[in-house]
Length: 90
Image (tube, rainbow, N blue to C red; front, side, top):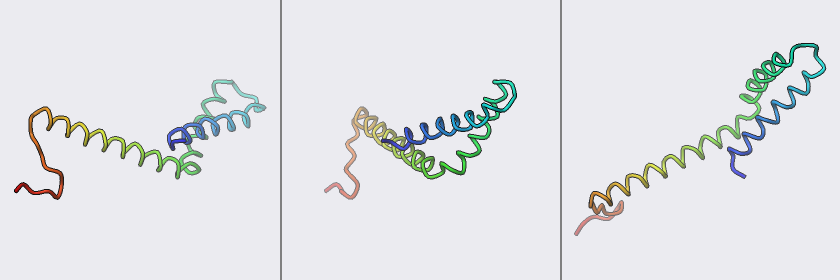
């Protein structure tokens, strides 16, 4: 399972736990949801740091792959035959 899916499910789960903890409190439903959103966001900042960092690394790696592929395709369309790194033309 990817880190993004794990992180997202953990954030939703944390939100639901906070909502369940606030359910017996006598306040407006909208206010309960807003308080739960704020508390779960703050808690996830500390509790889910590892998964958030893994997700950021996955996103950065995917962006780098897309950038490299885009550059390779642009070079191919322009007709530039660039040698692979380390290869020198002879």
